[in-house]
View 1: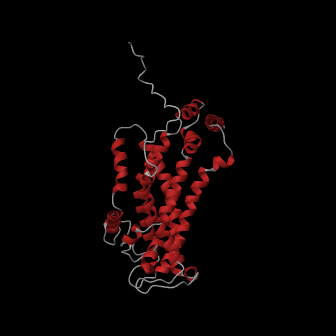
View 2: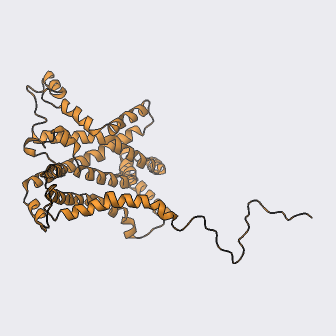
View 3: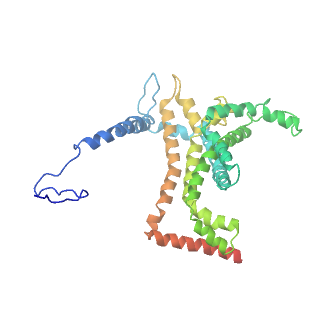
Length: 338
């Protein structure tokens, strides 16, 4: 008797009334999530909550402490060292944001071109990112020393008659640290821009070029709007990194914070106050809480920028894309005709 043929691609349906097949037990997903949850609670959530609690105490390493309310925050408000560190940090952020926003973009536009030797240049440009910041800062401290390469070169060319105090003067030292940060960050943010440039619709460039738009007009009306989300992200990352600056200033000043500690950052102040057997853990915790809320400002800016479309209303994706394309081409065409 010939059996009934069945397709190998079809599976028999379960009988009515039979229990559904379960490939895992109910606690299996929880076992997979447990390591990440434990890690987050132990190494992130608990230290954060403990820091907030300590900021309301006068705790010291060997003595302990007691609850003192907002006294640490009141002392912080009247501390000249804190405001000096705030000024240094904000100057660092304000100077680094435009430099590390524009220069990596120009570098990405260059390495994106298909010209001979550009692959080697792209690789070399990323070398400072993988180098240790401490080693690089040591090299820069030797270069900008009173008898370093920079001073000797300037004297040999006749630009300077004597050594320039790069690492002694407050503003020159801060400028050296900013240049070090910019040099190390160029390659990293260049990669971010390269990824963003790869997502820009090339049809927009072709349509604008056919309408007679110049390279600069296409850059301003097509490229910049296309990479705006990545640019906002980079600005926020630079702001957070600038507020948490430590290694560059610490190595260039040998841990002293420059002349009179004027080039100390907030993180350096936290280290100076909170370390040692007589460290003021409560006051250092208050400084840490202030730094945490300062870093929330650029992160909140990212969230606001990402949710802007949701607040303004939902539009079909294709329709929005066509509208942006038409607006970009129209803007480039108007500039060309003008």
